Length: 259
Image (cartoon, rainbow, N blue to C red; front, side, top):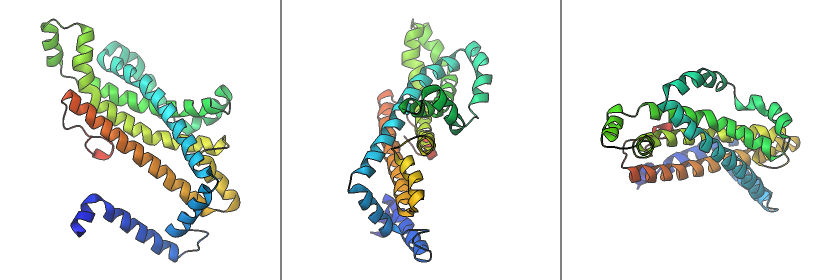
């Protein structure tokens, strides 16, 4: 029984809750609320539906920006990976701008796109773009030239080579990139919601400090973790399905886990 609990990962959650409760019992509840007080805070926020509204708003923003960023980054990454001339021209700029963190653009994006949804989605798009692009480009570069030449010798067109050789070989790298980008998307949206929003989990966390409601802050942190965990598991399942469809094995995702 104990071994079964350990293998399912429940042991980690139980141990984490016990450590959290032990630390909370040795501290001021207003400084470090325990699991039960955090649960009470979640119930309090759920009574008027505000908690679910904040989670829904943040998740929608993340999904919108992350989807747009991935759709732009994947074709660009494939082109950069397959055409050396394009890569030579764009890689220096790419390696320069990707080190500028998304949060540094919050003020600029607010000026360019306003304080509404556009600036937040643009910030997430930016945080997604370079991670997915670099991973996709790396995958496209690693396609074995023998496979490309073999397909070409059998009369395949460049478009057919792209669809049936390059893209299938690049899929594991694509999914690694989009899973990693999902994490940075949550980082970006929380910063944006703390600065310029009146809804969302980031707003809830930032607004809770005014009332010194640390239990609400912990509710926000746990909500972010739950959203990210669910999204990552969904992406892992989709990635595994895609890899099985293409007959690709051995790919790993974020954290070294197999897709």
